[in-house]
Image 1 (tube, protein in one colour):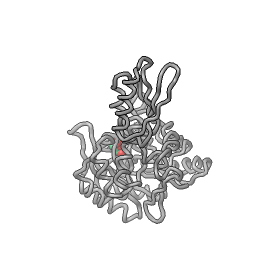
Image 2: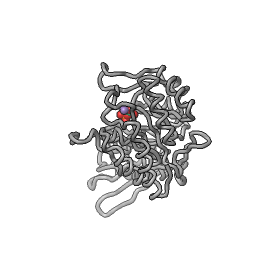
Image 3: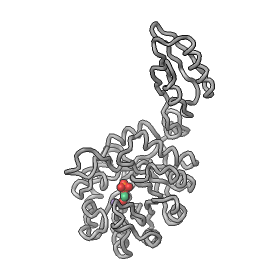
Length: 342
Ligand code: PEP
Ligand code: MN
């Protein structure tokens, strides 16, 4: 980082700043200018110090240079040169040529509902079954999910059809239980900032689908990934699921597809897009799924339901199962056009 001194700073004040920088374990390199002096702070500045330096007398401002998310960054992270490929099993990898489809109901509601959905997912040739067993509902009176029973049903349906399972883990207390049944642990938008939960899923070493919080900046989202990676778990997928903006009249959220390419530049981690929560409306899901593939997404997570009018959560954005073959055809064409497969 660079410390810019005020133009009336004295030599004594500059010396105090240099001492402070060295006290923080960095090297200070002073550049003397015609009107003002600047001090380059040399070392791994992700260790901090900006807040301390910027409140010192005679400091005008402090400009960070390094990305604060040093592990996931292409600038300084270990894996920066190559895109991360996450091997879910011998056949399915995320971050390769294939756009990985994760499809299923918002919530697991019953064995019949889940099995019917899973059969449609499998017939379409999609590799991953999604489904919530622990549901983060805004109202405590809304359906909260089947919990452990939901996890068991997911595993059973997936194993019968050779599918993989992605499911949300809401609390640190449930991490081991969810890790026993799931192939991918989903961190939801509401818990993207639950840092102890992030560390706990990091410790499992299981692939993690990290959703973007609906008020989270890309920087904050990458810092959340950093918590998982700091536990030695590099199997993190970033999932854009829409952010809140001022206009929710026509769509539930604003699906930020720019984030896909921004992330591609910033980090080697794969990027998944959720056009279901991103739009909140069934008719918008397939068009935005196409746009996501065109924008470079490595996978999509999409909600379906055998009878969306009866869904216990997110019915308006859930696709009926008979939409899947057509969706597959349409998305395959876009994938092919951008050198990918489905
Ligand atoms: C979900 O996937 O059903 C879900 C609750 O997603 P989000 O955390 O993105 O709202
Ligand atoms: Mn949902």
